[in-house]
Length: 371
Image (cartoon, rainbow, N blue to C red; front, side, top):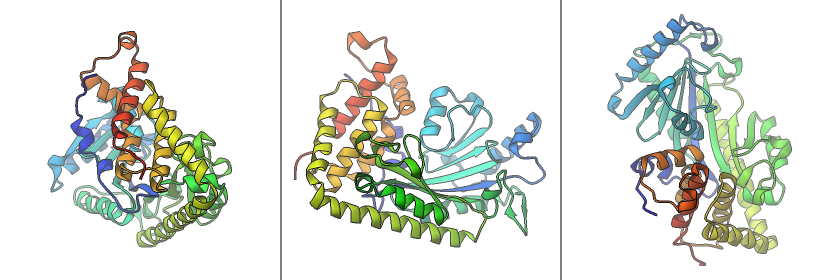
């Protein structure tokens, strides 16, 4: 099969190394803002919505690196584009068809206009980088405030559509890989404690909250034991206090997972090796791999690499695979590349995507070996 390199992938933020990547996949910081003298998006007239979109699109043109950004109305974005925005946590659902998106070419910063709030601006980085993502999103926000006026009050801070998003308007999030905690069934109590402290720990892939979380080897709601830790509210405390609290929460999860891995090295090493080798064998032997299988395969290989069972692949590449195997991303690659598939699947797009996913995993795993 002929393959075409996708430069958009090689330049994406999730392909760059980060710190603490044994546990932390990525970090993001989000600011929610609404323009003064306009109703919230749910009550906007079409003309008002168009005016807000024009104001925000123009405001980004004043940024020092304005040439690094692209703006598009969601109505002009096709289904594949909306899928990709959802897969990258920019849109909450791929069904959104009204509003706009402004995004840096590398995807590190994205801003939606007229979705839940007038402005929802997020920054993304690999590994544990909450200080950097927060600084970057505030840098852009400060530049924008030279040209737009946000709705705010001395008593409530920035005013947003949902009261818990008011105040600082800041939401912090990390994606975490917790296979050892899942294996030892420690995620539930951990998530309960985090919830009491004002944080949500929920499945990154699949559904379910802390009352239904396992995720080791396809078991449970959290496919591949990938979880998202988020702040519940931005209404209490200052931005610095919220950031400090999130740092403590993430550190507690990292400590719990690393301690669980120490236990697993003496009590579950054969089971983990079986999970790892089966994941690798399934990837190498398959012509077709669906999305659910691929996430669990990546998790199994990642767990094995972190436990010293496998060598020859880095956490950065495995984390990037989580984005590269997604449906929207593969459909885009399929539509823009030149591929020659087997005759019996030349008219079956679903199978072509599954075939492409299998090839991507096989190519990525070529250098893996036992240490």
